[in-house]
Image (cartoon, rainbow, N blue to C red):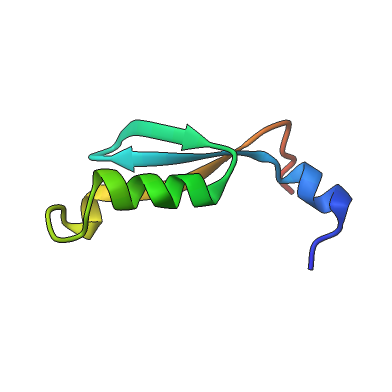
Length: 63
């Protein structure tokens, strides 16, 4: 489990992409998952067109 400090380092927003265009965003993954279910039901849209990603806030140091 991550500590509170580690969670702060990983803060950011979740984005919902459809056909590589941002259609929604939220700090809460549950909101994004609900948006997918409402806007893009699986019987109408192929799974490979929908992507969920997280954009981290702050600076990230790579080694």
